[in-house]
Structures are given as C-alpha cells and as structure tokens.
Length: 161
Image (cartoon, rainbow, N blue to C red; front, top):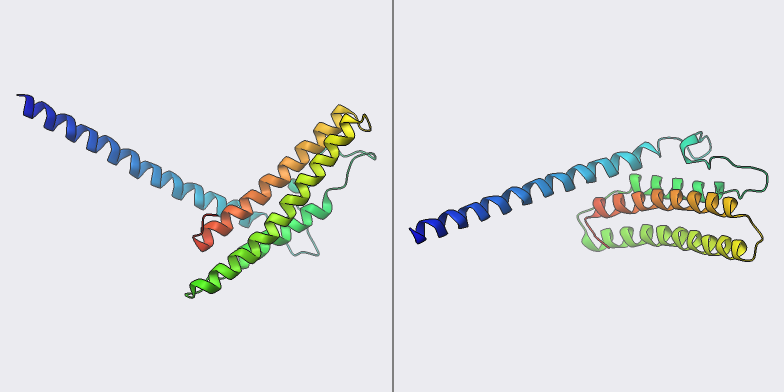
C-alpha cells in the first residue's frame, strides 16, 4: 500500500511540474511575440516623416523639457534592431548584437543622467514637484520603449545580456 501511495504521489508531482513548465514556455513565447510586435509597430514610419503621437510627452508646457531628441534616438535604434539581419556566423552575430546594445546602453545612460539632473534641480527647488514628476514619468516611458528594443534585440540574436 505504501509503494502504491509513493508511486501515485511521484506521478502527481511529475505531471504537476511538467504542466507548469510547458505553460511557462508558452507564456514566454507569447511575450516574445508581443515584444517584437510592439517594437515593430513603433517603427513603421520613415525617420523624416514621423507622426507617432504616442511617443510624445503629454501635458508639455513652455517650461517643460523637450524629449524629442531622445524619442528620435530610440525610434532610430528600434528601427535598426528591426532591420538587423542574423547570419550563420556566430561571431558576426555577436558583433552586430553588441554594436546595437552599445547604442541602447548609451541612450539609457543619457536618460539616467538626465533623471539625476532633474532630481537635483527639484532638490535645489529650481523646479516644482509636479514638473519633476512629469519629467520623471516621461523618462520612464522612454526607458520602457528602450527596454522593448533591447528585448527584441536579445530575442532576435538569442543572446540574453
């Protein structure tokens, strides 16, 4: 009787873990597809004629900061990621991957510095709390878009950096 109970318990655990594993893989694949679709949907316009209002900062007033150069940089990087081609040569893939990754990291570093500058300006009472929070939200949105581009890059080249 004990042996039968141990066998049944073992089988139950095996099926339970097997079921979780496959659903996690499916969820990861769904997320990969959604990530690639989101990144692709933001880069269909030409660089010179971009009218994507989703990326513009909302509630901008005269005293607010202009994030358009960062938006353009992220749009260009995203377009490069989407247009990147993988090859059968692993070293060439690594080279392309890290070239694009450096560009993503450079913009991310600029956004971090900008966020620090805004925080310092708020602490020195040079800008209001509302202005600081609006700018911080805008930076977070840009960082989210940059992260989507990075995830698409990692998925395309199969490198998790």
